Amino acid sequence: MIDTPAQDKVEDIEIRLLLEALYLKYHYDFRNYAMASIKRRLKQAREQLGFSTFSSLQESLLYHPDMLPRLLRYLTVQVSEMFRDPTYFKAIREHVVPHLRTYPTLKVWVAGCSEGEELYSLVILFREEGLEERTIFYATDINQDALSAAESGIYPVDRIRLFTENHRLSGGKTSLSNYYQAAYGNASFDKSLRRNVVFSDHSLVTDAVFGEMHLISCRNVMIYFDKKLQNRALGLFNDSLARKGFLGLGSKESLRFSDYGSAFSDFDRSEKIYQKVGE
Image (cartoon, rainbow, N blue to C red; front, side, top):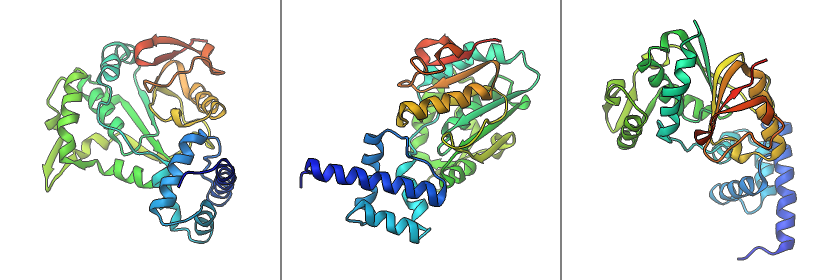
C-alpha cells in the first residue's frame, strides 16, 4: 500500500511523540536525528516487531521496558568492520602517530564504538607503533548490547578475511592472525588488547565532555544527526580535545560549514582528519 501525504503527516506526528516518550521515559534522545533516517529505521522496527502503528509501538515501549533494547537495535546502527577505509588508518599511522609520539601519555576516544571493530583497529595500530602501553582508550556507545559485544571481542570468523585485507592495506606491520584465536566459527581477539580500554555508556546527544583526549575517532555517526545535533557533537569533541589534538570523521562527514569549522585545521582533508587549532 502506498502511503498518502495525509498518512505520512500522521506518521510523522506519531514518530515525534514516540521519540519524545523514549526520551522522557528512558533518557535516550533521538529527537534531533535526521528525520528521513530515523523514520526508515522505525518503519523497519514497527514491521519486524509486529506493530501496525507507531502509536502502538510507543505504548509497548512505555509499559514494557523489555521493548527498549529491542527498539535500540534498530535505532543504533551497528555496521562496521576492522580497519574500515584502510587509507584512514594508514594516514593515522603515517601522519598522526609521529605527533602522538611526542606525548608521554595518551588518551584516545572512539565515540560511537558500535561492536568494537574500530576500537580494536586502533589498539592494534598503536601496538604496532609502540604506543599502546602509554595509551588509555575510551570506547563509548549508547547501546549496551553493542558495548557488551565490543567488550567480548568476538566476531564471526567469516569476517576475518575482510579484516585481514583491510589491516594489510592500512600498513599493518604484522599478521592480523597474531591478535586472535579462531574456534567454533568465531574469532576471539586477545584479551590483552583490552587491558588499556575503558568501555562506557556515553551519549553525544545528552552527555558532557569526555576527558582531555589526544585523538578522537567518531566515524559514520554524525551522518544520522541533523545540523543542530552535529554542532552539539562537534562542540563536545572540541571541548574534549587537548590543544592540537586530532579528530577523525567518516568519509561522508565534515566539520566545515559547522559552528566549529574555524576551531580546526585540515590535517588530512582527503581522510577527514582534523587538528584542533592551537590556543
